[in-house]
Image (tube, rainbow over all chains, first blue to last red; front, side):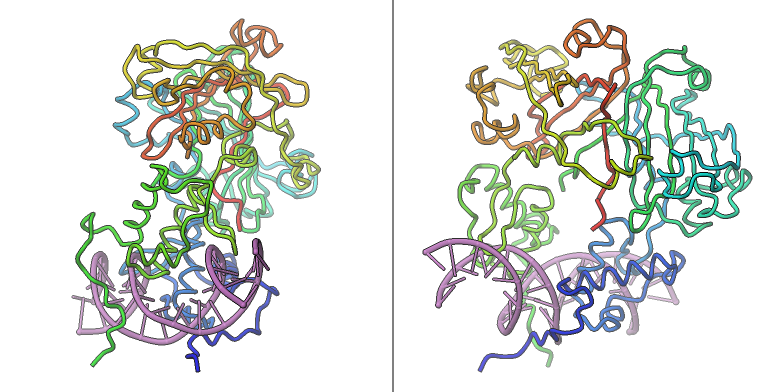
Amino acid sequence: MPKQINARPKPEMPHGDAPRYRVVKQALQKMIETGQYSAAHALPSEAVLAEKWRVSIGTLRRAVDELVHEHVLVRRQGKGTYVALHSPARFMFQFFHVEPRWSFGDDEAMHLQKPAEYPAIECLSFVSSRASDIQASALRIKRGEGVFVFENRLMLGQRAVMRDEICVSSGLLKGLNEKKFTRRSSTIYSLYQTDFGITVLRTLERARAVSADATSAKILGISAGAPVMQIHRLALTFGDRPVEYRISTLCTQAHDYVNASPLPAA
Amino acid sequence: MPKQINARPKPEMPHGDAPRYRVVKQALQKMIETGQYSAAHALPSEAVLAEKWRVSIGTLRRAVDELVHEHVLVRRQGKGTYVALHSPARFMFQFFHVEPRWSFGDDEAMHLQKPAEYPAIECLSFVSSRASDIQASALRIKRGEGVFVFENRLMLGQRAVMRDEICVSSGLLKGLNEKKFTRRSSTIYSLYQTDFGITVLRTLERARAVSADATSAKILGISAGAPVMQIHRLALTFGDRPVEYRISTLCTQAHDYVNASPLPAA
DNA sequence: AAGTGGTCTAGACCACCAT
DNA sequence: TGGTGGTCTAGACCACTTA
C-alpha cells in the first residue's frame, strides 16, 4: 500500500481549476490592494501565511514568488516580506527610460556602467480641471469629471531634457494639490502610494518622433520644429486600472530613450 | 534524534557559494549553447536530468524554470522540454516594437486587442564589407574584420514604416549570403539560430528623434527633414555576446514605438 | 538565541499527450 | 498505458538579521 503523503483536499477551489498557489496569490494581492497589509510593517511570516490558507510552505512561497517578481512584494532575508515601496532607485530602474547619449561602440560607457543620474524635477504648473474626451477615456472616467493636470520640466545635469504633462483623476487622488506635489520627498509614484494608497505597477508607452511645438521648444530650450520624441504613457495599478496619463516630450539632442528587452541575464 | 532528510552534501560546489539550482542552470545553459541539446528533440526528462546532476527534481525544476523565464527553453506538458526556437510569434512579442497608431483614449483599439500584423520585409541591399570603428566596437570585433551589412525596408499594410541597416560579423555567421537571407522562411533571428546556431536572447535599444536624411526619406516615402525615430539596437546571445548591430529608422506618421514596462499582470 | 527568508529533499498525485 | 511536465506536501538545514 502506497504512502499517503500528498493528501491534497480536492474541493474548496474557488476558481474552478486555478492552482492553489494562484488562489493564494490573488488573496494576498487583494489584501495588499485594500491596505490590510501595508508597507509599514512586514507581512506575517511565511509559516503563518501558509497556515492561514492551509497550504504547505512551498506552495505559499510560490505565490509570494510571483508577487515579488511583479514588484508587488520584496523579500528581505532574516527580516521579513514587505509591500514594495516606490523608491527613486525603483523609479530609475523600472520607469525612467532616459539616459545620456552614448553609442554602442563606446566601450567606456557600455562596460563601465555609471549609476544613472536622477533627474531634477521642476513643476511649471498645476491646475484642477475637467477631463477632456481623450483624458477621460484614457483614465476610464467620464468626460468632465475632475482631473489634476500638471506640467513638469526634468533636468539632467543642468540641461532641460523632458517636458511632462501629467493628468490624474481627482477622484482617485482626492486632496492632491500643488503644495503636496512640490513638497514631496520622493518620486511622484511614491507620493501616489504613500499619501493615497495607489500603487503604480506598470506602464504602457507609445512613442513617436514629432516636431517640437513652440511651447515645448521654449521649455526645452531648443528651436521650434526641432525633432523630439513624444511619449504617451499610461500608468496602471492592480487589475490594470489606469492611474495616470502622461505625455512626455523628450529632447534627444544629448540623451536617448532606452529600452532593454527582457532580462539582464542572471 | 532528529530525522536526517535533507542530506545535502555540502561539498562539490563549483562557484563557491552558488546555490545548486544555479549551478545546474549554468550547466544546462552551456549544453544548449554548445548545441549538445538542440531544438530538434526534447531534452531528457526532468527525472533523468535531476539524476544526472544528483539533485532532487524540485531543484532541477527550479533551474529549468529560470531558463524558461529567459525564453531559452520551453516546456510542453505531456511532451517534454525543448530548446526555444525563434518564431514569428516570438519575434512580434519580444523584439518588434512597432504598432499602428492609436491613442490611449481609443477604447476600441485598447481593449479589442487585434493581433499585431507581421511586417513584410524587402531586402534593398546586401554587401560584404569591413567593420568600421563603430561597427567593430559594437560587435566587439577588430576594426577591418569582415562584416555583412544589409538594408531592409519593412512594410505594414502597404505602407513603408521602417528602414533597417543591419551589421553582423561574417566570422560569426560564416557563409551567410544574400540568397540565404532573402530566401529564408522565417525571421532573421530564426535564420541565425537554425542555420548558424546563434540564438539571440535579448536586445538593447537606444532611440532618438532625428530629421530624416535624404536616403531614409526616399525609402520611407516621406519628405527629407521630417521627424523620424532612429533606433540603435544591439542583439545579444549567451553571455551577452553581441550578434547584430542594427540602426532602424522608423516613420511614426501612422505608427508608434511601443514599450510595456514589465509584466502583463498574470 | 530566536525568527525570518533561502535552499533542498523525497515522494505522491494530477493533467496532458502519445501510442 | 506509460511517459512527461505541473502541483503539492512535510520537513530539514542554511544564511541572515535583530535583540
